Length: 247
Image (cartoon, rainbow, N blue to C red):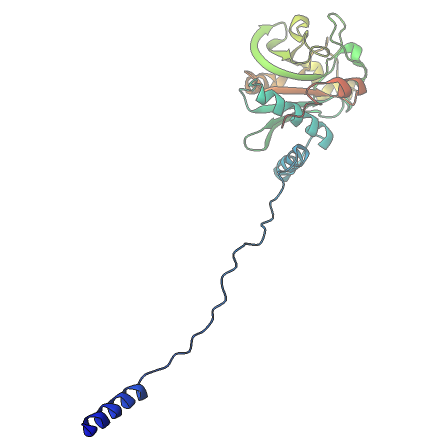
């Protein structure tokens, strides 16, 4: 009996001798809460417009001023929210510039290209080389400021012409009644500047050089945006399109 117990004890001791001991390692627990993630603020309307201006400027040498562009985009965005834009083009006419400068730009809003940069005339009673007076009154022979949407074409005494519908009651709503349209004119060419020291003037229409008028009109017709800009304080303060908060 003693021999059996001795043999069993030797066997158990030998078994423990060949057993590998692995110490318990206390692994730190995963953190239960994540560090706060910084959320970037949505760009403001002004920041979005500035970014778009830089995108245009990166691929186009001749740009409208940043001020006129900013105002134009503010109104363009509102026209889009009102579902009034069908042709994704934006025409900017800057009547704060003299008529001796090319002050019309036609921008493609889909690929950031400028399709036209050309001369444009103002009304006879709006000023000489510089545009200073504006009106929405029939027979005033003055240009009208603000936002328009291009409409249909027709053939008149100036050839192919384009109706533009004024969107701002106080400033340009009588454009169609006044036959303020886009048309071609020989007096809107550079030759007039050489002869007169300025462009010739219209009855209130934004007239463009006759040699490009047909292609230009066919490009912007049918629901594109037109913005006629000036530093006129009354217009800038009262325009519902310029002072809109819509992005």
